[in-house]
Image (cartoon, rainbow, N blue to C red; front, side, top):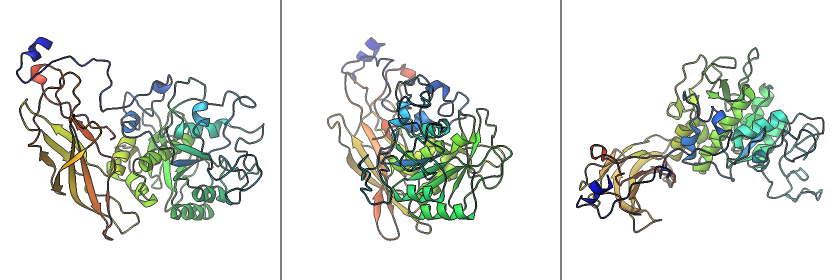
Length: 452
């Protein structure tokens, strides 16, 4: 095979690509021993949230905080419930940047003394682990499903959250003040795994939404009423590995989500983690945009269950829509051809508030050549109705030696009615150069999941 390629006049030198090399673009599979058992992240029957594909775009940002309301959490080893402790959960807890721990002073003036990791409104204040007799298993598991880091631990409560690089704020119990506290202290989204609802709670959720925080709640367990917080709450229905619902059904359901842990409590943190990923990839998104994009039909996988809301959660599709970028692929013909970049335009995007949708103005085409390892340069601007571009300055060739591939990316330029223009900051790239395959298959492998 190598000799055949070397005989081609277009090839300077030829070496096969090792089979153990991770592709430039593609799904990210953690090496955590328990990953294969977490089927809701990646399942053989595809009843999952497409986590590896989503993590190729982003695994989250430490600047994005998820408030977890599901009970006390275990943050320190030893003591009561030693088997509940997991460093991949404790290591991702939010640290209040304005508070000095242990000085008994409300340093940042938010009304709470030493609230380093959150606040327990059930009477334990800054002690979010609760008293010795407290149940820390449920709350820790809720946090795990949202933010548990990707590592190599194999502890009983270890796992991987849907947003493993984000942080969680502990607000163990659902009192009205918990919701407002989380919003006031910068949480982008709150996961609520309890069963209280009503007009007073709805008002708190609405107030928090207006302050910039989304609210994901469990829909309930079998035999319970549906918990719903209109008009801004996101009611999450749990489904099992066979897509069978484990929750009441009804029009109040917003979205269905698989969860390895067989309880509705853990579906809401998974969706909250997806929201956090969306916020991580595009920090400029408002709470209105996040909610609209999460519940957009193009952001979910189909699910035909009764009362399933908009569909089944797909982290990949939600992140892709949140980025505002088009879906890009490279169409490379035979050596010597000019490469053609094609994309599926994302020509709709919610505005920062209702009634202010932006308009797609144009696409920017950018290219990175071998000699400029870390730099993309704009090579063309095309109209919003255009879906392909032929690069007349580039010739399709074989990848030689350690030659870097030529990469492309396409940016959508959006304009609000106020004439404020912003760009989608994350774009997908395609790998131009041909891979070593049979002559009948000498076409470009169009990867499309790389965050740049």
